[in-house]
Image (cartoon, rainbow, N blue to C red; front, side, top):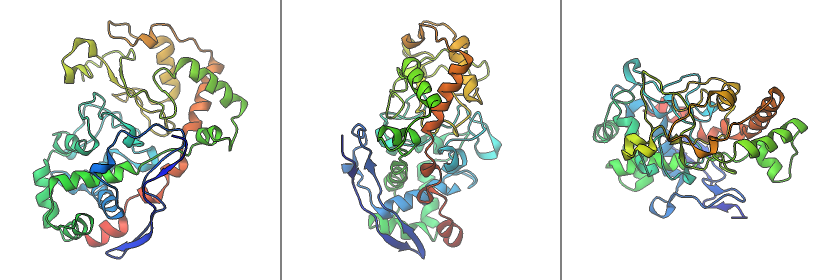
Length: 342
């Protein structure tokens, strides 16, 4: 698609004294594929997006009101869980997997490291119900929301009904997450011919296309497939990946290929957060691959990189950082709303 698609143009408006200014709610960047999400079944509106933002940041979703979506998905780390190998939940419980970054979700076909969820609207159900994360259920969440002073009013503005439902709750969270588009990194500026790579970044880009792009395809920097990237099994977690969902031995140790956008800030890396640095990741692909029957065919040929070439690839990866996304106040904690009225 060659022209940006603007689904909605924003205006300045007020909710309970909370003023929000949005230029647009959703757009398809130039030369990006068509989104997977069906907007006709959940059309974006400002009121629904802002309701979803409040829900995303509100710990009311958890059993004991201590854990919000934001607890494991912080904006300044591309909505990942910085410096935490595994997700954390209520009562300081530790989850089983690393919390992935959240961005460009409208283009994703499945969710979770093993693809257990196949629709964005259903995705929040997993952490809400997970005993090691929020330890609640959607019915309990709805009852709690209904008892607040804030949410019946917000749901009335968003959906025309102050009676809160699970469907509306999930759709509102989706609406906010759909607006989390990251497409304004230096890489994007170079592709639009508005900037140029340094020689080091250019060399890194060339190497990246030769060694990494089979799984991390432009412009989303993921092929949205499930691959076994040769990690050894963590004896404590014993995570078999997608096979847990499909029960197909061919899916053993296959995990969803994550996007590399904003990878500078979304550490630690891998489904179990075992690597803290990008150099650790590259070293794994160079000398740490564990051979197995389900190893990705893309990794059957060894990757050979010199020390300088590793530095060059990392220099390129840093061009995928989108600071306008990381610090966009439209995505930030709505303190004027939650702190004053809830």
